[in-house]
Length: 167
Image: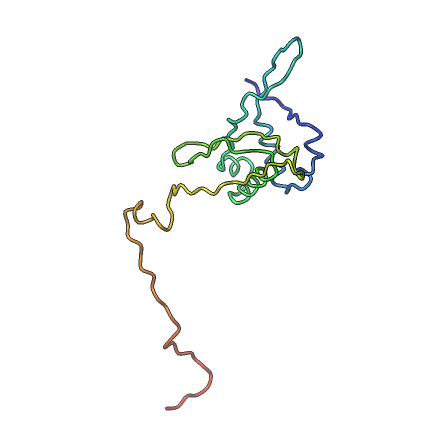
């Protein structure tokens, strides 16, 4: 399937209170997410309707953000957090990068209700699965013992001076 050279979005998205309050990097990442949508034409009762066929299957990795768009991991993470908090995307599946299991995202319409009582707040859940190396599981996973930290103090250290010291 050929990639389109255009990104289509509604004016109401750009003029929404959520988009206006948005941080700059998060707005860029939002457009990169919107560019990943794939649309198909549905012919219902002779009306042409476009439907997003890959919503919930959109993948955007930290490695791609770094290599292709020069976004550091913390910067990309803050952008994802903002996108979720303002209602533009939701996480469909939490992946574990170590196992080639990618996180998939869903383009959301929650931003329409931002700033109203109907807005459904969501936040990014902290990963508590304990994947990778942590301070608690380092010895178990690496099969090595940690080095004992040396205690260095400034006691018994003499300083030099320009004065003549006589005993």
